Length: 217
Image 1 (cartoon, rainbow, N blue to C red):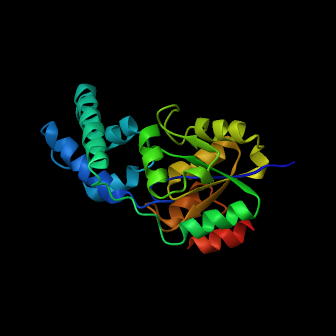
Image 2 (spheres, rainbow, N blue to C red):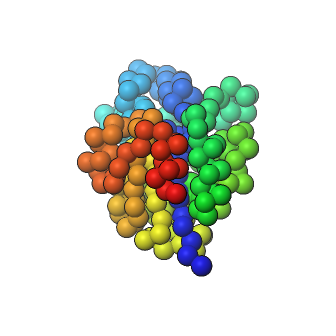
C-alpha cells in the first residue's frame, strides 16, 4: 500500500512560537553582554538549528561567545518551558487540518529546528503527539535546509519521496524539500513571505490550514 506522507515544520507552521524565541534570545544575548538582536531577524531564523541561527544573528563575535549564547538560550528557554511561561499556541485551524489529513489517509510527521524535548513538550501540550508517526529534530540532524530530516522521515514512514510533501513557512523548509526531492508547499501565516517561498521552490503557498487540507484531499 502506498504511504502518503505529509511532514510539517513546527514553529511558524503548526504553532506560533515567536514570542518565546524572541524573549529567550534577548535574555541569552544579554547574559553574555551583547545587545539584543533585532526581532525581525530573530523571526527569520526560526527553523534553523540553534548554532546556525546564532551564527547568523551574531556574525561578528567569536565562536566561543556564540557557544555561550547557545548555552544560555537553552537554559533560559528550558526554564520558561518548565515554569509554564512558554506560549506556543496552535495556529487557528491547524488541529482540524491535521485531523482531516489523517482521516484522508495521510501519514503525518514533523521536521523542526526544535530539540527533541522542546518538540515533545509542544506537541503534548496541545494533545497532538499521537497524530505523528515520525518526529525529526535538530538534536539528531544537520540544520535545515540539509535534507537529512526529510530523508529520515521517509524511512520511518516507509514512504517514497514522490508520495511525500513538506509543509513549512520558511525558505529553509522549502529548500530542504527540494534537496530531498519532495514536493514543497508554503504557508503564509509564518515568518517568511510567500514570494520568498515560491522563489525557493514551493509549488504553491496556501493562505489557511483549511486551504491546505483541501489541496491535499
